[in-house]
Image (cartoon, rainbow, N blue to C red; front, side, top):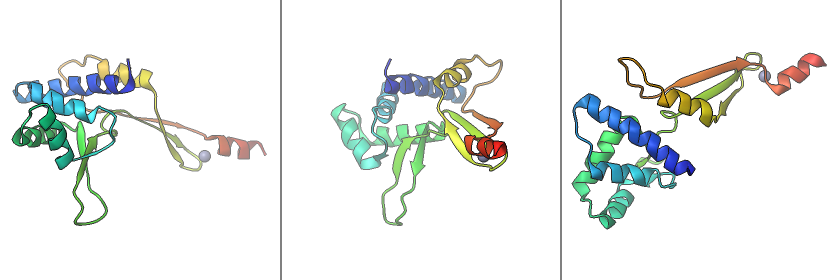
Length: 152
Ligand SMILES: [Zn+2]
């Protein structure tokens, strides 16, 4: 399974859970828009999404609706560009997906850890009377630099 396929399946499951919680139906069009976000392209403007969706005969209003739902479900986030007159971009919400941080208790340096094993375990777990939207995990310890300083 490719990375993007994995991301799509994970996001698709989260979308399904979000929709059923809201009593909304899953639609082929929303799935298609979600698939665009998981295609590997980092971020999209609304115009780019509309142009791409048109290829699949999905109308503009449906794209707007799908992006709104995906944003509300915290699967997609809006990235506001630096300039005021720049168009906003939409991208997969990485922090909403798998956030594992390591913090050094001495120098407070923070690094992000990608661990698909842990991510999958937490994401695929069946929670009793609970639907997960995202998770955070913080691992505390001492970084290499601080450990080296300690020994000197
Ligand atoms: Zn440190």
